Amino acid sequence: MTLILNRRHIRSPFFVFAFLSLAVTAAQNRSGQKILATVDGKVITVEEFKQRSEFIPRPIPFEDKNTTLNNLISEKLLAIEAERHKLPLSREMLDNIRGIKEQKMREELYYAEAYDKVELDINNVKNACRLSQREYTVEYCTISSGKLARAMKTVKNQLPQFSDSLFLAEEKTLNRKPVHDVKFDDPDDDAIHDALFAKLLNVGTVVGPIKLSDGQHILIKVTNWADHPILGGEDEVVRWNEVQSKLHRIEGDKLWRAYESKVMRGKKLDFNRETFEVLSNWAMEKYLSRQDSTRFRISEIPVRPNIDLDSPFFTLDKKVWTVGDFRDEVMSHPLVFRNTDADSTNFKRQFELAVVDLMRDHFLTRNAYREHLDTTADARISEEMWKDSFMSGYEAKSIMDAALDKGLIKESDNLGKIKFWDAYLDSLQGVYSDSIRINCNEFKKINLTHVDMVAWQPQNPYPLVVPNFPALIASGDLRYAEREK
Image 1: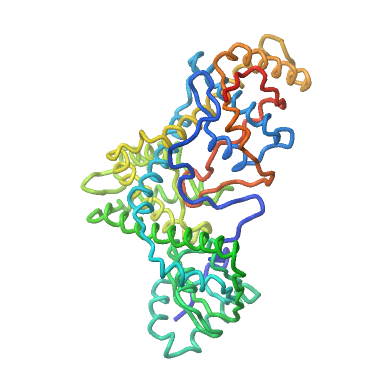
Image 2: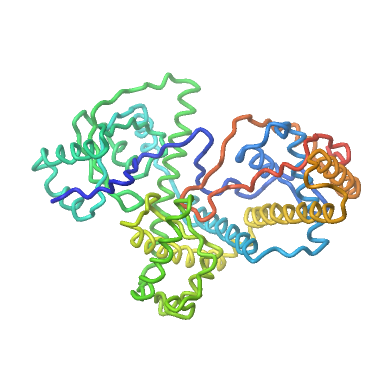
């Protein structure tokens, strides 16, 4: 048997987060949101203010709390003006807004069908708190072949030297020994967490092969361990809450996978192989030329002699999906690849899996609509937040383009453009001042961090939790707005 490894991109199965990123799981809000400000009928919630301030980097001139709110209010004002001027959003923007809303609806469905149904056993939490004090140093090797992984389960205990040969092969491929330190609260694949923290493991223990969420398998060997005892008091309370939260999320994810399986039960997706070959070859050419290696939107499938939008692409649940139907679905739900290392050797398999996941989300979204999850506070606020962000950008560009056309500003005069823009926003704030109210009590309670980060939802078609910060005006003057106690 031969160990099959992707030698071009060998990815660690353990999550590593860059300095400016943060992994965010499901929905952050959960309704009952407090209103921080109202802008002519539009609202800025306390949660939205915090997220727009802390889940995306803000330029240094906009880090002040007053300046932050001033910019969020200005964004709403520009969106209101865009609606008044009836500026049309592009088809792509409309598809994005719908896709973002439906992603939020699936998150709400996750809570309703999985997370909120979890009931943790107190004894399991106590046991997990004990296990959470251990940190392992492990050696690992990834196994791309499912056939080899299944064979390993049979011979691992009988022929331990065979496991050693796999670790040695991985070391030779990487030109280094693949070693990783693993702690209980690390954001690793759940399968890795379950394998290492179900019980205390000794040095030399070989675990696996474990099937990961991206379809790969991993073999792990414990090479060292250390205990970090909880000192008691406040540390014990903090650890208890962290462990309880992680266990709740893991159990919720298990219930969610069971729910997904129930939704997709009896549904078989059959590709038209001729169409699949043509479309996957074209998609591979486009994909490999892109910098974004995790998600892919086929916004315009070209009409060629060998690509017909009316051609059947696959059959699912007794319905034939044409290439055109598939294109329309992807417009609001970019394809998401399970393996971020898709290349010419494995692209077609990853493309196939991405289509399967797309259609799974199609049926989950349909269930979310049936449960009226498009009407929840979180879904509506999220939709309005993104729509206002897009609309304000359109309006700002329209204003500046008109000023250039009229000769009010010059393209090369940056200082003149800033003065014009600040004066315009100042005037706009004056026009709407009677319709802008700030809840001062809530505003005083907010303390913002000054750590740059990007809140990122991996394996989602729209990974950013919030839109980019609207750096519109470098002023924190809020005197135009009415204060409410």
